[in-house]
Amino acid sequence: MRRLSIVISFTIVFCLSVTAQRTGNRSANDEAGNWRVDTAFSTSNDGAYAALTEMTDTQGSTSQLIVPQLVDPGFEAFSPARAPIWGWYSDELLDKGIAGSRLVTMTPDSKTKVEGEYSLHIDQMQPPRGRGQIYLAQALRLPEKGKTTRSFDLSVQMRGQAEGPMMIDVYVWEPGDIARVIAKRKVPVTEKWTTVVVGFNVPRGYKTFGIWFYMPRDEEAQLWLDDVRLQPRVK
Image 1 (cartoon, helix red, strand yellow):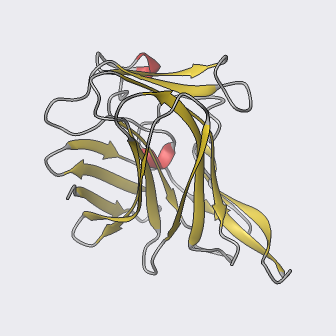
Image 2: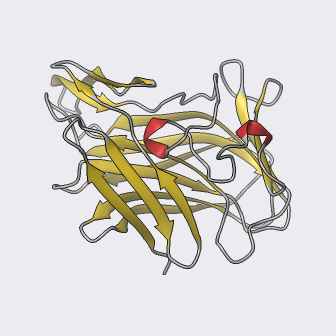
């Protein structure tokens, strides 16, 4: 079983610092910005953190929820973040930009897309040796004020060229700096655009959760991602 060790510390100005390490696989350094909490929404240094969303349940009752918002969910302004809490993050791109490393590049693609102006094209030339899979990640924090939910559907449009599957994991962080997987899905890679949905519940007592997209373990693989959505589940 793969394990991810993550150290989380909060400062008095609500600065979240995260250090992620998947034991025996790979490591990533997580930092965070200063959060400004309002009654209706909160923001980070990089933009919207949560938004007011109106939801209607199966009985027709309407309620307003404050829902965490992904940074750049459609990859319209893709720029590698310094940490998952700030946006899309990959340790392979750290200090290298979208040019990436000798292992992978992650670049906006204006030709192969589902919506908007761009998708994200991940071109893996070779997998890491002895430290797990190349990944793209983003972490979100539940609002501290207002009515919110802990039940979500994560959806993404994807296509690619690979023999092995890609993986989607959703994490929360336990005391003792160990990540706990709360949702996991193995997804076959096809050359046609496919909508992939992962449902999950953030357990009580956890304020932060992370979304990790893992590349296949193939020697070479290509993946396009577009239109990532995080929506509250309607009960």
